[in-house]
Each structure stands twice: as C-alpha cells, then as structure tokens.
Length: 326
Image 1: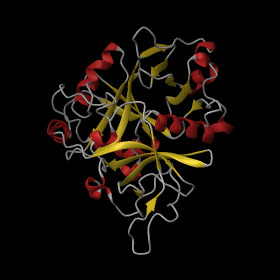
Image 2: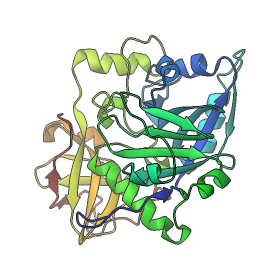
Image 3: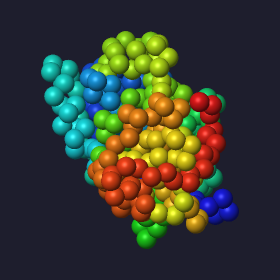
C-alpha cells in the first residue's frame, strides 16, 4: 500500500481464530489476558496480551464478542501453541476452546463503505462491535476506520466480503502496513516471549487493565508500570532496502538497538515497528543474535545487519511518527 493507492480488503489468511464457549468463558479469559474481559459483554472489542508468568507476551489477541463464543484473532502460526497452553489452565472452569479457523474466517476492511454496500451495519454511536446474520463487525481501534469482519465462509462470500483470493498476498501486506502506521503491534513465533506488554505500547493502546485484578503475568506488568521503568518502547521506522525479517536484531545510527516486531515493504523502502531502547544506554538487553527465528510472515536476514564477528552494524533508519504519544 502506498499513500496514493487504495488498500485491498478481504480475507486475512495469515490470521486465525480461537473460540471460547461455555458459561465461564469470560471469567476464564479474565485470569489469562491483560485486558478486562467484562467489557466484552457491553459489546466492546478488546486488544489484550496473553503472557507467561514472567510477564513476557506470548500472543497479542483481538477479542470480539461473537454470538457463537468469544473470538480471539491472532496469527495462525500461534493458534496451536496458544490453544495447548491455555488448555492447561482450564481446571474446573466451564469453558471449551477450539481452533475455529475452519468455522469462522477473518477479513479486514479499510473503511465502512464496502460494508454498508454489502448490507451490513457498522459500529456507531460509541459502539465498537455489531453483528448481523452471524457476521461480526468490530472496530480495530475506536479512532480508526478499519474493521474486523468475522463469519462463516459462505456468509462472507454471499456479502462479497472475502475479497479476491488472487490478491491474498496484497491484502495481507496492506493490512500489516496499516497496523504499522497505526502503531499496533503483533507477535509471531519469532518474537514470542521477547517483550513485556508495555514494550509493545499496549498500555498506550488500551490493551492493559490495571484495575481488573490478577491474571497470568500481571505482577510483572503492574510492577513495570508503577515503577515507571519502561526502558524500551515500540517505535515506527523506515528502513532502507534489505532482506528484513520479524524478530531480527537491529542497531540504529543513533545508538539505539532492539528487535523488529513487524516489517512490510512500502515503495522503495520498508516500514517497520521495532522495540528499541528509549535511550541508547538502555537498549543492551534487546541486542540479540541477528540469526534469530524467522516468522512465517517474515523474510530472510538483512544484508549487512551483522558483521563477521557477530556484532550488529548500524543501519540508516528514519523514525516515523506514531498516531499516539509515547
């Protein structure tokens, strides 16, 4: 997507769905994710982190209150390990969880015009989620004009919301680039357990409740917030040509270093989100090997990112503005 082109909307094949059903679904998730799941009952879509006990984020989820159960949108590659891990904590809770990727498809839409043309209602008057004929429409963020659309494949096809399958790669790139420009983080296999929620700016994106009570990783996340020691943050960058990948370690010319969280080609360069030290002296912990794991949605390692000795060489990246204040 370039500034002059219209982004493509349609099914997002890189994303999957977990579905939670049963009377204890909301309370079970309340003890697992960073946001207050009681808000789902009021029709609010939620952004939340699912973390390990050490406060390191395993997955970033977008939760929607679909009529068939709470739907959690996350990268397809994270659905199996997240499902396996969550099942260990069910105990006596009356909740069932499943990979709902076959039953429900995820589409992403830029702007509401196509949704209205398809005969669907869109969230308005302060609401973040509406549902019609089993098709759920949720705002990605309250201040955005992007929408999640989830529903059975045949229903999305009937409403012409699945997009052109021949454009699947472009649809994914446009959606991920819009996430980058919106400062919305994503976690893939290559970055799982690498960051605390605040490093991903989730406290600035209404992705953390600091009043809901205990959940997995809450102690570390709360301590980080209240001590005011957030030494690494998510920044938006423009990178030169290269073979960049999610999870790759980078060092900027200003001395800050960190890891790429998301990266997408944009014109002759790349746009990216990266967790970097707020100051160069604070970024040492983020300097990991540039041979780190590659996400299925990433590319090969960047040429010239590491010297023959394994030390990171500086790159001429430009910092781009985020739509919110750090």
